[in-house]
Length: 174
Image 1: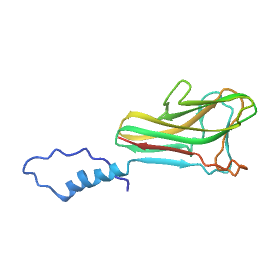
Image 2: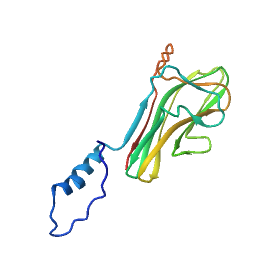
Image 3: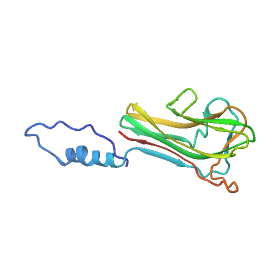
Image 4: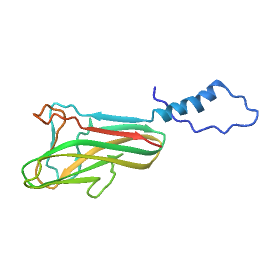
């Protein structure tokens, strides 16, 4: 069972300390701090992901949708992956949707431009902090878009010399 956080008790002078109170306020809270809510997905798919969308869309609404039940506060979100492109000059943009709203908005958390004559494959990664989430269940979805052309996220699909395994993760840090 995943430990849950119990707000610390204010003890009264002369109060009887029971095993249940000590377990809830000391043991369980220490276990919670040691093992905060975390979710991660390492891609090992049957096909790589591609997009031509010029608007932000989910990379994979099922596998790359992480869910955490938090005590409330901050969540650290990370991603690393290798991307390819069609032969055109293009820009790939990445963002994270948190509970239906994009984290960074605008053009996302980061972008990478692929120029003509440059590398066709690049590693993109980010770590972002989402502050002040209320206690409860939260969903984090990796999203992407391009300005033109076709982008590929290599996803452990056996692509020759590109059989890499990206990872998307989220962890409560407060």
